[in-house]
Length: 217
Image (cartoon, rainbow, N blue to C red; front, side, top):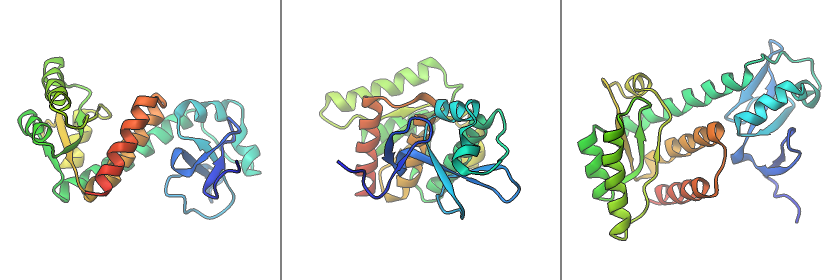
């Protein structure tokens, strides 16, 4: 079967895939390589699967200058640079979701959103205490036992990063509620998770289900 028109070939793995699972790179005007997260920058581009290990491999094997046919500057820590760009984009979208009224914070409100079926995704800060995470995990399991959907939970940011995005103080637990206003953030959150930890059949299935349900709310 031929790849779909929106498929691209990863310069590291040499396999094709959807643009939603890859990151585009171009040569910037200053001669440095740029991650084109919005896929709208001009010029010749190349694609790499959206996982940090592939970015690191591309840097190590000097694949980006070859693919872009340009003597572009590629920093040794480019994988970290891309991670930080993805995190910044995700946090920006998190803030927009809050302004749209589809984010709640605090363990009690998150627990309520899980149990009443309005939560689409739960976020725990890296510093979250095991006991707090365990209690919200129990709430998530209780929904499944009652025949409801499995609500995924991610840990992507430090509390200070979530504070800044939400304009709050000491944000440890948050829930993003179902609705079209949350779709952009949820898509970015799963991309960041995928970038850092790699794909799993379970995680990818959850991501696809949550994204589809959220977009149709």
